Length: 191
Image 1 (cartoon, rainbow, N blue to C red):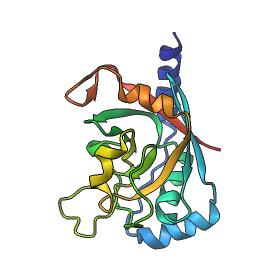
Image 2 (image 1 turned 30 degrees about the vertical axis):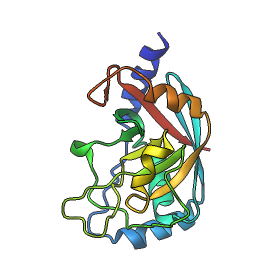
Image 3 (image 1 turned 45 degrees about the horizontal axis):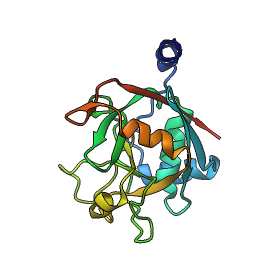
């Protein structure tokens, strides 16, 4: 019953999502200003299986601002963790058919690695020589040893600071070819 109620609330709230496209605005300029006006750095992810908290890094201000913007605009309401990355983690957010019209400029730092609990943005390789990040798709690492090969190739912009057991439960759910057998819906709120 709890799953059905959460799903209905999520569907109702989905229509509240704001238009997040930037059209012809420069993402770096826009996100820099947005980040100054919206300094929040923690979010709570709500799932049927429990909640977890993510701390966003100050070292990656464009990614932090972009993520906070998505959360405040309702983008991460009624989304799913749609991929269990083989032996590495989980991925969620907006899939290809629901992308925005910009990429987040890269912010790579050697000390921000794909450790257990790391939160990073996915990216598209085709036509993206700067390795800029997706504005919506993110993933969370559950196995540091397997994820080390991603260091320096994807921007790590935060980490799970509470509720890593919930992330593990999502990762360990039954799946078919990296797709969870039962969709794991989530919504995110700013703390």
